[in-house]
Length: 405
Image (tube, rainbow, N blue to C red; front, side, top):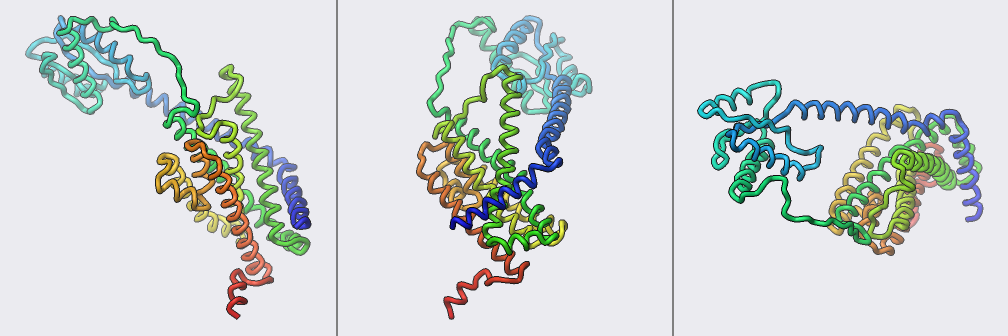
């Protein structure tokens, strides 16, 4: 066993240096920067397009000169209830001209600039609303109701009768919604990093297979230790990658916001323990997916074969992400239990559970369960490589044949 770990350590150190000590690693390390820049540019363009569309979209109310100040004041009061980004369209209040109001409403609704989506006209007690969208019509209906209530009660819109005092009060483990959001964030982060980084193992093994290096390594050490060493080496690269971006993101956040640290996490198990468990589950997810990719890279001979064989694995991993995301939104459900037990979705689902459940022992059991499946996956991959590529060693299920004999 000591020889196994020693050989694993040598191979891990060799692969880690082979990746990190190359100029292309710097490009790999900075690749997310280009993704962030493109995302910011795309988000800015989309935000500007939405803002421009919102500025051109309006609703209107045709009311009497007597009701005009009341409607405007009520509208100003109601808009305080909406966040700016999801508030109702701008309201134009027009003075009524009696019998021509219906025609004026149709004319306004047919206009292209500004683009009215709903127009109210008639008495506030029995208003008529011409609409193109239900949202604008619903707001105009409530506006008429509240305006009429204010007038009948003799209230002045905007003048508050109460003076509430708001105080911050947070539970020790945060709200249920906050814990679920934290759980989903952990699921997404582990999935994204695993899919981004674990795929590097398949290309490396295929390259070493083509230039016969893997055969030299297999002759010098057990194939299982070669596979484990490569996984550990690539996981070291992944940790370096993640650590670099965590430090860079923390410094950037502190500079931009003047904060001294990252925002507090809302996790039932506690923020420090939650972060440690997330690192552990990221390691398990990386090892599981990396072991599968190693098996694929060991069987493939060309990059075309690697791409063809990696696609089903990627689709399977996306399906595991979807299952774990559903589990994060329904903690304690049967779906969540299945996702926590199924080995390939377990790292994601258990990270979400850490945000929603304070019990620690299920995580110890889950990490041991996942580690067992990492060993099984590596064993299967090594057997397939030894039998299918090296043409040596017993078959995958040879122990069953020996038992029958």
